[in-house]
Image 1 (cartoon, one colour):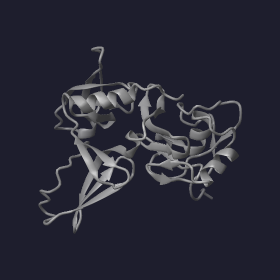
Image 2 (cartoon, rainbow, N blue to C red; image 1 turned 120 degrees about the vertical axis):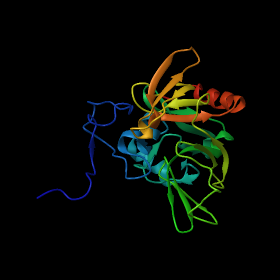
Image 3 (cartoon, rainbow, N blue to C red; image 1 turned 45 degrees about the vertical axis):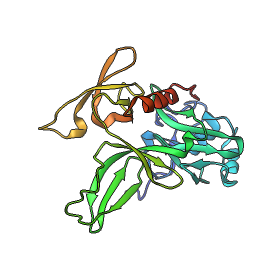
Length: 258
């Protein structure tokens, strides 16, 4: 008889390689719950508190901190220790005045300290658009959706967001503060593949005709002039002008928490 439902346990050996855990110390590790990020692109809250930030020595202590409502993810109090956090999520601990953003690096996903002001905003990427009877539904990379009501759903001229655009969203209000296009000369960071974590200027985006746009080749040049190639699906724009470029680049270069 086949198994029914998901497997509720996870061994350490097949866990994602970038998780900061000892592979042979213990057999089991907490498995992330179903949520906005997949198993391979997230960190469960237990690992964040115990193995990354070091604010808890055991999973039990981590659970106690969470149940007290002291941890927020994207402005929402999370109390489950297996809740998954992923790319560009903002983790806030107001009681200790600590704020972090989940960013890609050559190791995988890391937590980078940010200011309280920076923690008010989150960057999300437009993954898909769907026309509904009342407007256009925008699917974002973190599993959330935006419904934009328009006068004529068959001709939604009010919606200017395109696939792979980056939206800077105010976490408290949900309003879009800024839109960043994924285009040549803009700054971007690579979120997957062997060049994960590399940030630089988009030099060229391949024009696609016989293949999906997500597989289009993109050339990225870092601040040292070194160029690397990836696919558009792994490109996350972070700045579209000089001032924003300086702010975001400085945030990415902050001391990271391993």
